Image 1 (spheres, each protein chain N blue to C red):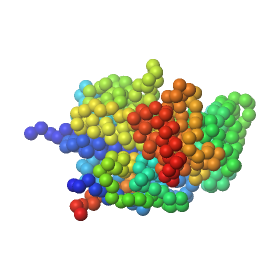
Image 2: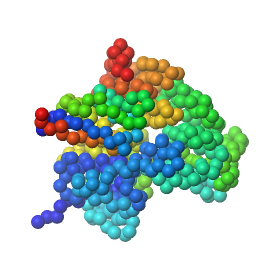
Image 3: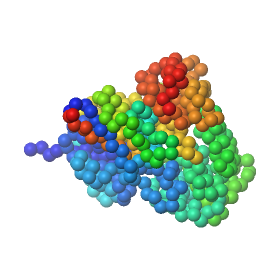
Image 4: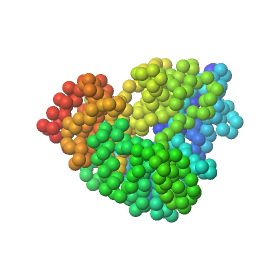
Length: 72
Length: 406
């Protein structure tokens, strides 16, 4: 585990509530007119992981998941 | 060989499921049984009053897939409600008369809409479940006019959804300005103006005395003697805890189940999570809840972690909620205390893009409300979590204005 994580948005679930944006706007955004959240940088540093994990947990649509990006 | 330890979670709520995840994340190796009253798997309730009422047939999304539950060893039993508790023998009594032994019990049965009945005893529909949503859709399809009793968030979200369906809506309630207590006067006035602009009729500042009539012509009587007709009358007058099944159990209740910030009820190995749970507030007799989505999830998870690890860590996350009305998403973090000043520090309330701080006259900072400034909120949330002074919030606002992030 090198602390790098890939974030996946499930487009079939996301409701663009934007809770993730309020939790970590450097990583998530819901651009004007977008029906779903977008990930601004899909690999985050260990520093960001706590907030990103919170965003994953509090998503009412449960549209976010984390995958280990693996060693590279 | 001793049998595995059994964790029972009463209530397949957002908090209950988060507690189950917290148990596993905390290393719980025993069984986890989640009891849900509804016959369907738990779903995203926040959608009921937001997007779903506008749409003719869409269903809310389930909170967990069967695969996710199986992978984590969570036994979800739907249509199987907790109905009683024996704290001496450590048994939960279920709706079918069965008993379920527990080593740890997490109470997470949540809340339901407060009901209101007509003078003839006919209950007015509310909005708390998928069944309520389906009933409301059918009623609204056939209605030209809807009278909404209550001026809380759910009620106003329903009003906005009904206007999108071109139904005539009248909102009745005792508050002169809806949501002023939690959003502050300026934001509340702006939001109510959106309702007026979209054609919602309001008769506010007058209590509802009684509701007469029935389907097709309800008559709502206000304290000023006025009578309001509606094809349909809906009640959006807040929620009550689903805790009557605990009457006589020995678990302390006052507007919900009383617990400490770690979630302990005072009864050994019985914990409380989410909407049902109340902690003592700072003033005598005051209790605080975790009734909003984010807090229910985070506090529930914290209880699960505590149970698994044998710890009693307190949950102190700031209260967080959001509402969507007419395409505007308003988010609040922290609280607005009675008498607070509301200071706009970014944007302009009238423009629908703003950050407003709520603070006491003595400068104690309590919370923040924002619209179209989602990207600004992370900083304020972190400051509130750290109980930072108002000066830090002012400094953050100055910094964000000089280098806008959105």
